[in-house]
Image (cartoon, rainbow, N blue to C red; front, side):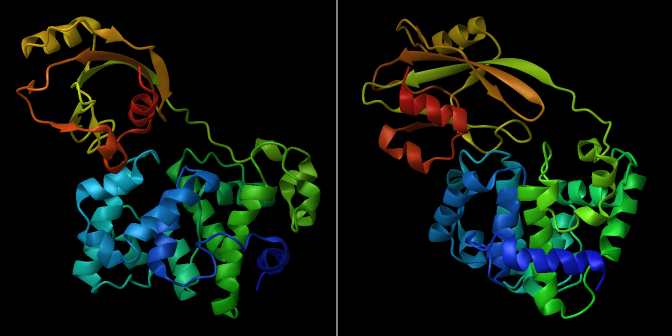
Length: 345
């Protein structure tokens, strides 16, 4: 093995994380589920969702057989909901194309919905001892600092070059032991030592070979100039509520924000909301809740909830359903909508 991979394997064996529920297993379903959940989400947030998901869907066959509504309800609050839709599609394809067993190669794994090259590499490495690289945000940070790689990762050519370097550094011997430890070690390094701000360089097993450490400017890496363009929108949430507490919810269209989840009718202005409510015969005075901000990756949503009490026999002439408070936990709701309903307004 390279000196670098030897140091990472040795460090992970002694100092790495070993307590997480998806570790110390070669069950590709569990590893895959954790990898998808951990995309852009912290470990502390994922833990509860991971356990609940496995209680309801302990195998890929169970997930494939679940309904869309069940999957979205299990995912509700975890965010980035396209992951849940792809998760469900992927489980079905594993059953249909591979007889319920995840394929072993990066190429075949990458052909499944929602599995990119890095996720495929993690599954192949952890479960099948394949010599496969990963390149998530944490690993990019470790590698660019150690190598002094200052090409702009906003460029696809730079990304391709870094992939090649990552593959060069992989272990070459005793892959059954070393590949899972190396892959986990790279993840652990980025999460606990080589952090984005104020990295703990003196605790790093490779700081003696790290270009960024020698330069005294680790936070300069990785280099990526492309900036996200943020936008903002105001959504007015029409909350029709029956005397028994039931709320009228509609499934959000795809594509779009919260696609496939249930939400109150959304309007782009207060005037449009009041007109919509009146159109279906609601006559009660609206109760305005406190507006609040929900921050998405690319957009700030300014949410304005408005509750309109209605009669028990009121049924809007549009697609949707009444959902009682006791049923809210089992419905796929966006996190801010679930929070709004739970606290009342």
